Image (tube, rainbow, N blue to C red; front, side, top):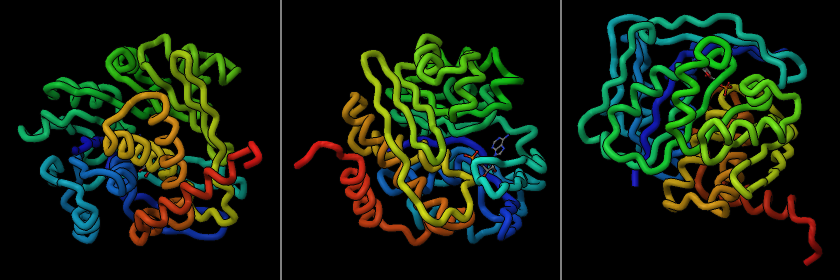
Length: 302
Ligand code: AMP
């Protein structure tokens, strides 16, 4: 069973207080696709420029990511740069260059249109909606978003929320979306806007899953070394949706497990810059950390 993933494909330049790297593979769809590939084949929809390095295309292919929906346009690939403080929860965007993204209108290849499971990675809600119009019979749609769209594209975002099954966003975005200080109230209010489930990510403090008669609080994996938090949210969304696709179940029990798989893959990703760590990651590593997670969060005596 395949998962369709759309979002940005970028060349990122990232600076932390100890390291700096330029023009490395990034973008919401890149992180999400590789993360999801540990669970299911992926159909990628996106755009890159003629300067996009071949080695990154090979990386997608090695992970079983189908590139039939990847457009290569004349011009430069989308670029983003950001800088982290010593407290790596704090990040400043230094620059965003849309480049080929400026005129992008995703066109799904015919054989993608029947894909039942969808992850709309972080891009404008207008583009996310445009992808949805081309799908034949989507069964479960997960979407990610960011503060930029909450501030500048409220109407299309509201329209999108009525069409998706699950929204994944971080805590400040959840508060900003429904103008609430309490995360619990924010999660419940977002449910009223359309999605059946909402996942609120709290960075190194784990995440919360909301649904009707469902509340689950998951811790984050306690990592000692964080090198680059970029893309953690996208990896979470990719592994979360990838796991659900692999079991073809969307009930509360499956969603709880998916939240842990999302946290596990995201925790590996931040151990190195860009997607470096995911390139050597194996399914066995993922399963072992999943079991550690389980043991760590258990509080009943056995
Ligand atoms: P995250 O760390 O989960 O916020 O995701 C970081 C990734 O989002 C980077 O790899 C960027 O290339 C990408 N990104 C940053 N700004 C945007 C934007 N406006 N639209 C789409 N992707 C973006």
